[in-house]
Every structure is written in C-alpha cells, then in structure tokens.
Amino acid sequence: MPTPETDSATPDAANTTITRTARGVAQADPADRAATRSSLDGPATPGWLHQAADFVRGPAGHSATLGFFGALLMTFGGFGAGSTRRSDPLLEAMHLSWLRFGHGLVLSSLFVWIGVIAMITAWVRLGRIVIGRQPGIEVTLNELRVIVGVWIFPLLFSVPLFSRDAYSYLAQGAMLRDHINPYQFGPTELHANAATVLDNVSPVWLNTTAPYGPVFLLIGRAITSITGDNVVAGTIALRLVMLPGLALMVWAIPHLTKHLGGKPTTALWLAVLNPLVLIHLIGGVHNEMLMVGLMCAGIALVLEHHHVAGIVVVAVGVAVKATAGVALPFLVWIWMIHERERRAAQNEGEMPHPVLTFAKISALGVAVFVAVFAMATWATGLRDHQIGWLTALSGSKKIINWLSLPTIMAHIVTWVTPFQMDPVLNVTRLMCAVVMVGFLVWAWWRFKSSEKEAVLGILVAFVAIVILSPAALPWYYSWPLALAAAFALSTRTLQILVGLCTWLMLIFQPDGAPVTGYVHGTLAIFVAVVAARSLRTVDPLKLRAAQSHIETQTEKLGTAAPGPV
Image 1 (cartoon, rainbow, N blue to C red):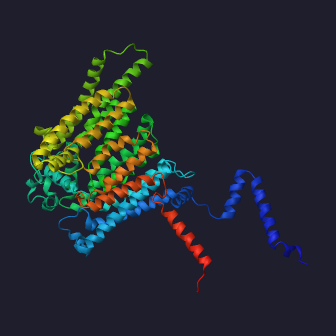
Image 2 (image 1 turned 120 degrees about the vertical axis):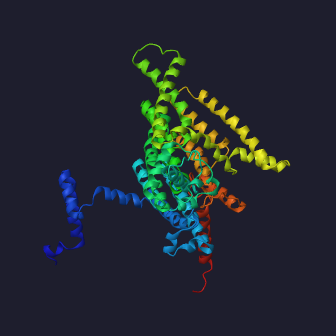
Image 3 (image 1 turned 60 degrees about the vertical axis):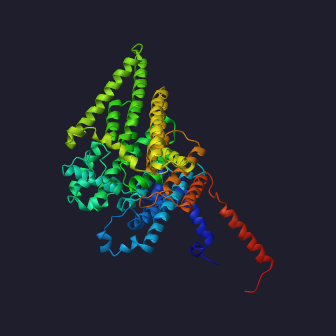
C-alpha cells in the first residue's frame, strides 16, 4: 500500500494538486492571480515583445516578411540589373562586376523580378486581410505603418531601380552649386566640375533644362555640396530626403478618409504599401514622393480648416514639382464652403456675393502661394528666372512611349496611313493638350459643391493629365492613386486598381527601359489578372484543388493496387 507521501506523487494526485492550484488562482484577486501566474510561468516577457512575436507569426507578419525579402532581392539584383553607374569602382573593389554582364546580368535580373513578384504577392495577401476577406484576422493601422518601414529599409541602399532620374537630380543640384543656371542650361554645362555625376545622366536629359521648382533645386544643391561627386552617397541622400514625403503620406491619407468616406487601413495599404509606389518612388528615387506627400498633407490641412497652412504646404509641393499645383484651384472651393458654414454657424447673416467671396479667397490663396515661391526662388539666387522651370516642362515631349494616349493615337494613325510618326505625333499631342485644358476647366467648375466633390475633382484632373499628357510613366499614377485610396472603394474597384498597379510595375525593365517584347508584355498582363483575382480569392488558379485531386487519385491507386516495396 502506498503511503500518503508517495501517493502525492502519482499522476492522479498531481492532477488534483494542479486543479486545486488553478481553482485557487481563479478565486484570488487580479493582483494575486498575476503574481501566481508570474511565479508559474517564469520571468515576464515585455508586452510589446509578445505582440511583435504574435504579429510575426500571423498572416500579416508572413506578408511583411515576404515583402522584406522581396525588397532584399531587388536591392541585391539591382547592383547588376538596375540603373547602374556606367563605371562602378565599388563593384569592382568587391569583385562583383560580373553581375552587370552576361550570365551575371541574367542572374541579377532574375533576382530583381523575383523580388518584385514577392512584394506584389505580399501586398495582395495583406490586402485580403485589410479588406476583410480572411475572417478573424485583422491588421491595425500602426502595424501597416511598421510594414512600410520594413519594406523600404533594404531599398534605401539599392542603386536606382527602373529609372535613371536620380542622376539628373544630382546633376541639376550640382549646377546650382556651381552657379550654373539649370533653368537656362542642361547638365552638359557641368563639364569637368562633376564628371562622375554627368557621366551617369541619361543622354535624353543632357541638354534639357530643369523642369523642377526652386525648392527641389535647393535640395539638390545641399546634397551635392555635402556629397560632392560621390554618386552613391548622393543617391542615398536623395532617398533620405524623400522619406519626409513618405511620412506625410502615411499621416495624411488616413486623415483624408475622415472626409472622403474611405477606410484608413485600406487607404494606407493601397496608396503607400503599393509596390508601384514604394519601388518606383523610393527604389527609383523620384521627387513625386515629396510632391505627393506635400500635396496630400496640404489637402488634409485645408479639409481640417487650416486653410493658409494647407496652401503653404501645397505651394511647397509645387515648388518641388509643378503637378501639385493642380490641387490649388479646387482648394479655393473648399475654403469657400468652410466660410459659408462658419457664417451660418455664427449667425453672421448671408454670404456676400459669391463672386466677391471667390475673389477674396482666391486673392489670399494667390498671395500665400506667391510669397512661398518668392522666398524659395530668392534662396536659389535665380531671381531673374523665377518661372524658368515652367518653360522646361515641355521637355517631357522627348519621352515617347505607349503609355500616353497621344502616342497611342499616333501609332494607330501610322499603322493605317502612310504618314510618318513625328508629324502625326505633333498633331495628336496638340489635340490631346487642347482636350486636357478644356477637361481641367470643366472639372474645376463641375466639382465644387462639397469637400468630397472638390477632392474628387482633383482626382479626375490628375487622371486626365496622366492620360492626355505628351508622356506618361508608371510612377505618374501615384498622383491620382494617393487621393483615390481615401474614398470608399468597392472590392471590384480595388481589384481593378490592383491589376493596373501590378501591370504598371511589370512593364518597365529594372534599368529604366520600357518593355517591348510580346512575351514579357503577355506575362505582365497574366500576372496582373492573377493579382487582381487573388485579392478576392486565395487560389484563383485552382492549383490547390488540382493538387488535392492528384493526391486523392494517387491514394486510390495505391490502395487498390499496392505494389512491391
């Protein structure tokens, strides 16, 4: 017979002891329960560490990890297949020059494209969670913000991807640093002053004057004054300068949803985590990152009744790139709506005549805009060429690709008629320019009844500019996308946008050249369709069902006719 002492060591007795302990913990007060659990479980782990571990193990964490490794692959592959320097002593010193030629170039390109597909896959998977297609699984706004940082971190150290514009930015900054007017001369005027920078500028832009505003030239001058002729340091510095624009987008777009009816997490996922935005604007080092961030922040401030501050921020965006100026006339309508609401709330009587109100508010807006521009231009020292960059906007006509409607129209005409491309293109561009101006005026007058309508007018105007302008590039679609994301969008609309963004991400080569091969173009369309369908369906190609069917048939065959081992 076992004694009571030995009986306490039996399994039943142990279970009884655990049961009594658990019951005692349950009946104790919260403080005692916490102390008891701490003594049973060992040292406490910080709450944030638990949350981070749970997040990484969850579906959203898996998507974040996949996107991070996709960015790593793009960064490594970009050293050989990206918009590399013509002469790269850094790669030579690391014995990696082989990545730029022959089989090395093929391998590098493969890394870049696998990275792009990985990031698109991670983005779509994350989108399914955001829009609620996976019940019981959620992702918060703060978690999405963390994922933004995780995804862009490797891209901060890559060579420029899918574009060589970063080298033009550095050249124009070096020109201002060396007291050469970039609104009068092209980068070729640098000569030996910045030979390494000049050597990497795309030949298309060597004799083109700067089409950017004075604020961006000041940024370029500051960077090249610090980094000198070092293209690697200059590129990284340019990316760091773009980060405030990304931060402004992360802040502003969820704020816009309060006025436009969208869901903050969906908006942030579509407009910021979008590979088209992160890879092109951060990886490709485009000043659209600053321009779009400033524009979105300015619109958000105006919607929050901070009218002067909002116009100042948008004006700074225009001083980076002129496209942001499209928003300014629509902001006048929002200011007028707020003024009418304020007078009604404070019982100040009827509004003055609408024309007088419009003139007053427009005058204030113009005064703020002019003051910002005057200060920025004064800082550059180019006082005799305050708007010289406006005349350089026509330089985009040097780009001829099939993403813009005028070019598509010209190609169609040359296919069915004996006319040559250049004269036909001049005509189609003129026709589309006239239509675009008329459309912008119509949109400004049509969308003025409410805050939501005014922002919708800005969105419509951007779409018209992208489609009808002489040249269009994939990252131009980030302009309307940032505003469209803040509206309430159906799942079908989100699918269309996912397909469009995926296609745009795949139709340019990593070195910045547009895709011309039919095979690549067909594959891009296929991947875009799959990505769009994947937003709603986990397995759009029914691959899992096919695999399950094969396994079932194999099991049946194995059971019916077992063979010898």
